[in-house]
Image (tube, rainbow, N blue to C red; front, side):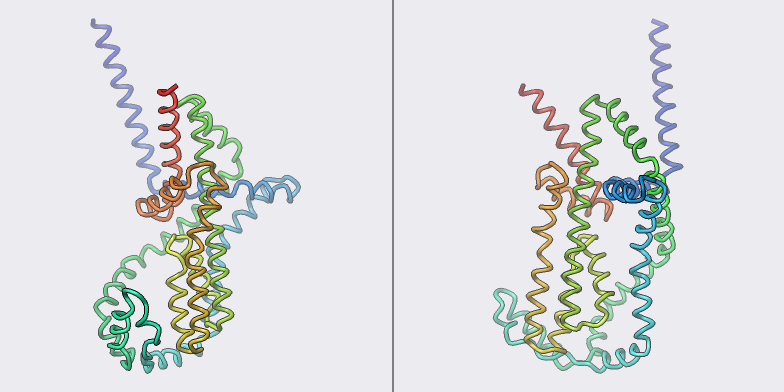
Length: 350
């Protein structure tokens, strides 16, 4: 009896010690968890690209990792460079544009607006209330809302430096994981096998497929939408088209979509280029704005052999629950949970 109590005490203390050790390790690594998750997602999603780059560079892993790291840095530096160049190039036009913006007045609503079902009459009535008013008067009406938005951005501005540091940390961690990718993958499969034998190893493989499929769907869809949207802006003569294209790409990655930028540019085209160009820009905006509903699921389905509803629910639910990184984490969690449940049901029925 005393030996049983001794074993129970030893097991309890061992569990407490191991739990405390794990909690301490997570507490120490907590500042790096977000960057590490992003790095894992990026490496898993871009592993086929890394292998192709390595094959081109005579099978050398080091130069291939360097190329991929520079490409990740370019994702941050190129949009910033384009924005700064556009600001410097058009610096002499900014005062005049500001003056014209202050003196500008909202034109009457288009004739077709009132005929739009359900909301057309109300929208035309609201538009007529602001017709003929200058932007100064409109600014006075919007001032309370603008103040809240500005205060929100100011509260977040202090974290800009931390965002840049995290991005650099993500690049460094991605390079480390890419350099020993095969060893890390083998370790992850062994860990899964230790947890649940063959089923656990299959979970790890399925998680990688889900990450790769979501990356294919989200990134390729964002590139297609932003490029087509930017082409429309360029043809319509919208100023600062490269900057707006970069903004649309970031909004597409964040699953907001390019429709906000496109609708604003449609209003500008309608005002400056006439009704014909405005209608064409509106139709183009609608096509580009809704194409992700059809293109993204098809691309994701090609990368991961999972139910489409499960993947879409994981993307949207993960975005709401975890932010942008949830786009990749959500489908992985649902994929693992669904497969475990499906295997359990299959075993019970067999």
